[in-house]
Image 1 (tube, one colour):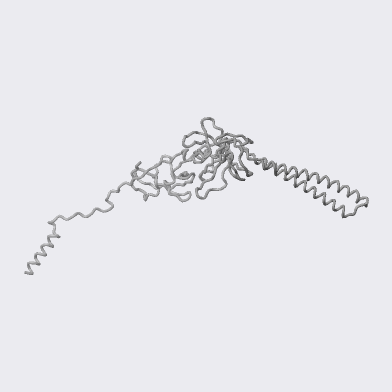
Image 2 (image 1 turned 180 degrees about the horizontal axis):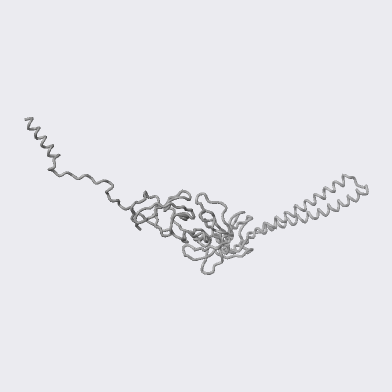
Length: 365
């Protein structure tokens, strides 16, 4: 029985190892597997930056804007303007009740007259005392007393004059006038209202003296020159206007990496274009760049660089080719290629892809 089982086992083993059966083919070597092309986007260096790259968004604001407040407390007896009214410098806007102020002014003037009379009397006395003292008919102590009285009378006249000035100033403060030409933007009180000192009554803005505040990226702010005329576009209407650069900020905002540029809005060539304080605008600084705008430019993402040295992946005959380049950063998101690249080279748009020299590529849109 054992011989029969052994023979069966041997037969099975020989059948499994013999050439009579069909065995599975061994897997092909990895080198023989066709490489699948890597899909990439490719860009061609531009020879000039688009104007949109050199644009910044800013806002319009008035160079003259004020909240007009009451300088004295009192009741409004007259209000002559409403919100939206155009006013001239010196125009009366509101009048407070001056009854108490007039009484105070009259009292101050009366006090001044009394002080003047007292001074005249003191002057007469001191002159008489000096004459008698010179003749030896008046004691020194009496002369000193007359001199002191005269000086006190002089001081009282000065004090009374100051009180008159204060009372007259209070009368003037009861009349609220426009400090400059402009438009009333708000009105917070009406006739009959009692207002305290410092209470804001009107908002006033000079609509003919506007400026644009533009936070400009630090990468190209040095191209902007004081006195340069820049083109602007009003959002969202697209109406054009011009502004003249007045000043460049002295510091860089550490959060946004921008520098504040202030530009005076120039008179509109088209009366239909109306700018208002608070409006958003787009400012085009491309005209200020000049010849510095020439060169070969690539998006920053297309270059693997540290400092000025780096490399790009060039698409050559459907394969990746590493190309060493020298670059300089010119604008946020863009670099200028100084050396190592031609204007007709096609560059992989993302330099961070894990590519090698010779990697098969398929350019996709």
